[in-house]
Length: 303
Image (cartoon, rainbow, N blue to C red):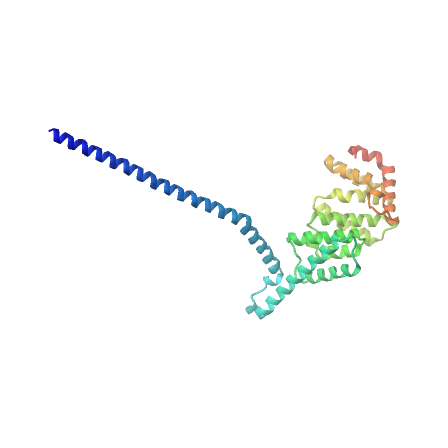
């Protein structure tokens, strides 16, 4: 019996040692597995950061470049085999069109960044614009809208009124849906009808056209100040009262913007850095309007 008890004790000790060893072994294996998983997750996180920071922006740039290359309406035509046009001709046309777009963007940047531009640069930009328009109207192209706005702003600042109108006509769908361009068109044409004593019907038609665009895009306040001053200078007091009545239906902030614009333009130095006779004429028209209707304008609040 004593021998049996001793054997049983020894067996228990052996089993305990084996159990402890197995537990330690499994723990070591588990630790190694956890470490391997942790390293793997670290690599995954590092790769994810690389993809988000480097790969995705590159893909986005590639996508933008690809869209610029295939936006032209010719891609909407039947396939070359159906249309009877060799594939090589289509590829060449697309490359030529893309090159024209890049040239247009470069000349816009040159004109935008310079203190002034030459008639040669202006004519080059217009020639490229006409060439591009023969391929597409660029409706919905945000990047093109930005560049077109920059060119129109530069032409307006350079007193190139006819070229401003020409660009607006060429890319009407873009101009009529871009707030910044509409603002420039209304302001430029508004100055035109006020800087001469008797503006011709074409000038007035242009302003009315752009004022309508402003209204369609909920930008009425941009055109309202010019409309009021022009109506007053034309001796149309009923038109002035009609426009003032329209303003009374607006919220106070929009009406105050009109009042502020009129009051600000009574000083020629607030219109342009270089005051010319034309700028002074615009300021004088605003001063005369303010003197005549200032009391009614103050009803809308302090400017």
